[in-house]
Length: 107
Picture 1 (tube, helix red, strand yellow):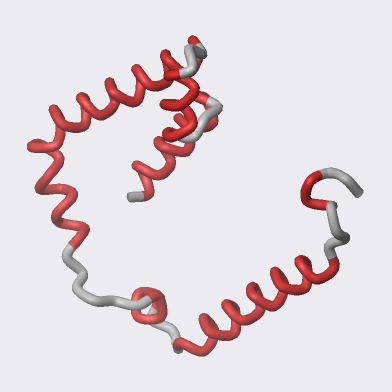
Picture 2: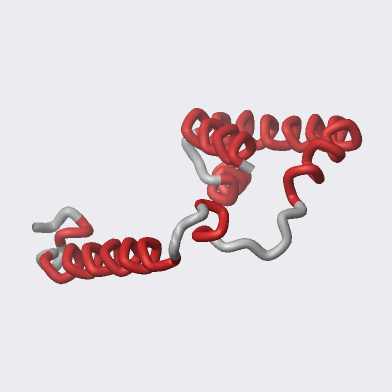
């Protein structure tokens, strides 16, 4: 998942579009998007071709059963709860302090 996520993110950064907007831009005739969509399709073909050989390695990492982040990190769940509450509180505070129109660059 990590390798795939990094590759996907790098592709989006180079491509300049999300996959859905890339397909839409391709339909609108943008040449850069057409090349990007062709790259996505080529990547899918390569994955399908390599999957039989990769399947044993992929499956070896996937069967952990039901596991939580505290179990994976061998910690108490409370630091995770406190951290999540802190992140949510920070995000809500940032939203509260935002001036109207600021998100659209109108402030």
